[in-house]
Each structure stands twice: as C-alpha cells, then as structure tokens.
Image (tube, rainbow, N blue to C red):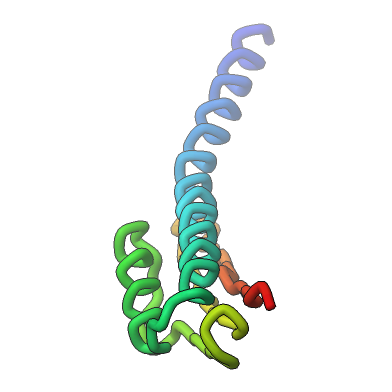
Amino acid sequence: MGSVKMILGLFVMVAAFYVSAKLVPPYFDNYQFTDAVKDEATRDSYSTKTEDEIRKAIFKKAQEYDIPIAQDEIGVKRTGLQFNGTVVVTAVYVVHVDLPGYPLDLHFDASTQNKGVF
C-alpha cells in the first residue's frame, strides 16, 4: 500500500509540474506585455507619435513576447494635445494551451489608459 501511495504522489507531482510548465509562460508573457503596453502609453502621452506609430511599437513588443495578436487587433485612441491628452490602448488576445485531454483558452486583456498631467 505504501508504494502505491508513493507512485500516486509522484504522479501527482509530475502532473502538477507539467501543467505549471504549460500555464506559467503565457501568464508571465502577459505580465511583461501588459507592463510594456502601460510603459508605451505613458511615454506616448508626452510625445508626438501618431496612433499608427504607437500601434506598430506595441505590435513589435507583442512579437518579442510571442503574444498571438495581429497588428489590426491593437486599438489605439489618442485624444487631446501633447502633455494634455489621453492615450487609450486596447489589446485583447487569446492563448490556446493544449493540455492532455483538456484544451484550454486563456483570455488576456493588456489594455490601459494614460492621461496627461494637465
């Protein structure tokens, strides 16, 4: 009976490690991408970049972190003037993870809004 518990416990630990190895990277990439989007929105609130230039910069970051999002799926809206405007970035995407017997879609939203200081 003791060896059955040990084998079962070992199986549970291996399964937990496998599931963690599949699920942690998408969450970590989302964390890094969300941080990059917030940073880009903050810096671009005070620059003269156009919406398309902001979108291209965010898409470049998405490619760096292997985020499955198309450039036209990234929404950028800029209102107001430099130092006084608002930059709103919308980046919603889905990551598909294939677990044995249980395919999973993880939905992420890396959207942010930054207002100028005035």
